[in-house]
Image (cartoon, rainbow, N blue to C red; front, top):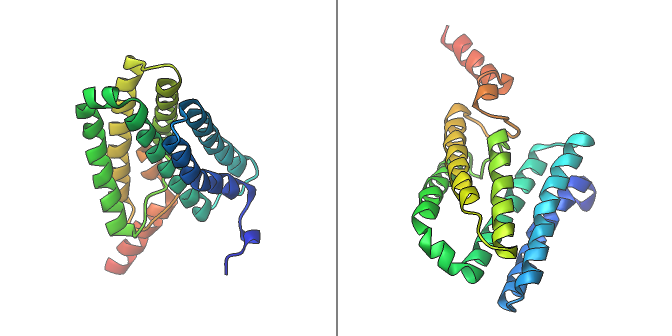
Length: 203
């Protein structure tokens, strides 16, 4: 049975991002752009903090990875809603590229839920780089205005990261957390043990 004692300090930073989402939407509804962007910045900062603490204190866990991913997704959605409210013209002008990234992402989420019953939490290097780029671009756009070259970098990284996630879903029969990328997946004992067991049964 899960109690508050079961959650570590890194988990609570993830909980903050989840709990902050409705308050961010309230601030958005009140039309306080600077306040909204400042608190969105805080949410993005907690994403960096919880990952650092989990690795530093060696308290990483599948539950923590899933909480972190859920917090990331909610924060990203809130950020996109903020852009639609405050930067609608920019979003409309670049809707083709935004849809180009979102369609494969939704496809990846569907595959994950069909296969695992929940979202992935691979946390690859490419996913982390993509998330940092997204956060920086969204915050800069809300604070100061668009950086166009960074927008296109963000789009490319988002596409590459989604393609890698889809490939990893097909590589792992069971849900796992903490896969650095395809290169590391090819040598991952969790995946190799499964293949070895199958070979032994067929021999």
